[in-house]
Image 1 (cartoon, helix red, strand yellow):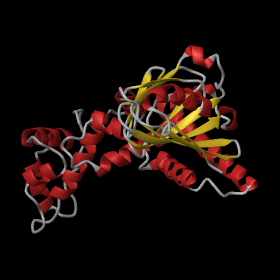
Image 2 (tube, helix red, strand yellow):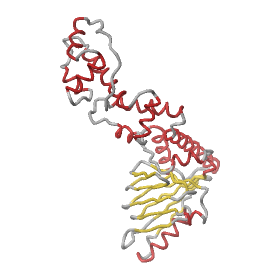
Image 3 (tube, helix red, strand yellow):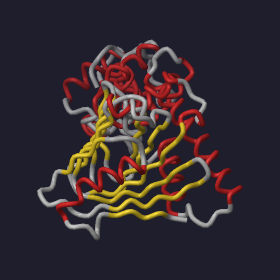
Image 4 (spheres, rainbow, N blue to C red):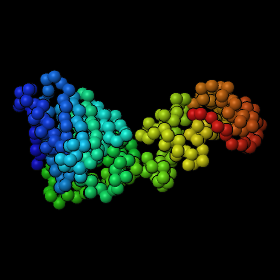
Length: 333
């Protein structure tokens, strides 16, 4: 069964106070500040799957704050997972901040202060989760709050799709099925929280190794992009540039060295093709992300002991294999 609460039938002058009561009564004690001179109507539709509360919220621009004073009023035992459906938001908790768009989601811990700013008309689905049901440490929770979870790929993509479908079909289940679905939700969220904790904690080697592998797979798919850089790589994986560098340092190299080595290796292979199918040196360099021909030539010589043209010529004379090569030198992405 769904419970719908709205300010639609109220005069605009009475909406702000009543909306504050609705938000705090539905979730946890919060401070709400509306940004419209004449408040538009807001609606909250709530459903329950056993211990899991699912609420669809649709309203105008506003800021919601969980202050230290509000924490003393209760509700600190909950984690709120918010799946953005329309509009954008900015969540700040601790020393981290996440900019949220449609399809992505965030986690906020009601036991610590946070701020959620909605600058435009919005719609989101909020899942109120008892923290004890996740079975994760406070350290893990702190790593997951105030960060962005994308809804496109990886574990977070799977969780976003599951949460979206669950919210759309949350009514009509018998009590046993509803409870089991809630437990499945908690299990998925626990996996996600632990994964994010491992990504942000360089002291967790098993998570770091898995993350490094995913980053390297991403880089290999984008080697042809001249704009590939540590900032772009880190943003694509929702991590800091500093942590990205730590991942590669733990693997005995740097981001720049690894990318350069992989680009040069692909150039080397392509230049060794038979003359009838080979491209020019400049074309090969551009194809694998090198903007400057002189930089490419210097890097190639440092790595293989000869210029790209010399390598290409040697490969044509000895098609079974060109002379050996050494290690790639240091360079930026």
